[in-house]
Length: 275
Ligand SMILES: O=c1ccn([C@@H]2O[C@H](COP(=O)(O)O)[C@@H](O)[C@H]2O)c(=O)[nH]1
Image (tube, rainbow, N blue to C red; front, side):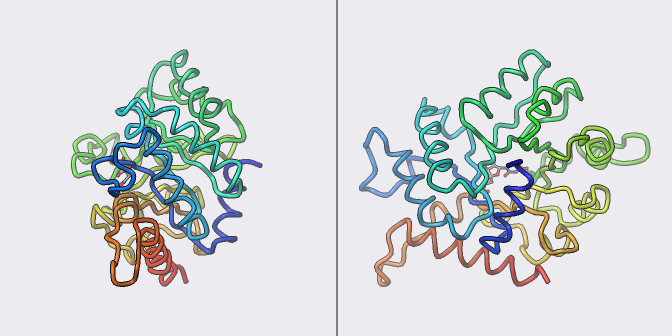
């Protein structure tokens, strides 16, 4: 099944636009996991099991694994997801960008080694740097457009022939790069006006929208700006706010139950504005 079909099915099956981000930071792990050799796998597995029915996608951020030499645990998490929750797409957040020959290897890393359904890619080096990912016709290629961080404006807002660079990227991907219907764009929830502009340019193309939760993006503004006519079209990501939700000790919560509570609250808050 293609990434886009899998994502559409997950939107419906779980009635959710929530993407649960997997950004494991061992300094924030609960005491019982500290010091264990497979702590990252155990933490992510517990979060996945607690939230799988609330999510339309999982988004592991590769840096959190690579920095700790924990790529094998990322492989194990992706394998666990593929076997246990095959209906939920894996979006590998790698933000790669390099010349074509190197990009071929990055594409193999994402799609062969980790078995991701989609990968995030940086468009700065142009079409030939993205083409190797597009060769994987059944996978999603999600291109940075208007990122959620304040410094994204430094380049993405520069004028490019009468429109800002981020709009140029959106137009280029929609008109020229998305010939196989497998592309998506990253647009931050912290910039709902720009999100609305991108939605106007790209039609129903799926958008990965980080920036709610820890980054403070407004859910109502995000959903209103980014939803498609049928109330879907987005993977609205939250990582830290779910992963490190404070357990309610009086309710007997552990970290996974707290994560589930926040994931459900976030999914429901998003759904209130889908129409
Ligand atoms: O523009 C972007 C692109 C990617 N990200 C990634 O999303 C998550 C956000 O984590 P939170 O804890 O919900 O803030 C993280 O993995 C980023 O690398 C982004 O934030 N903005």
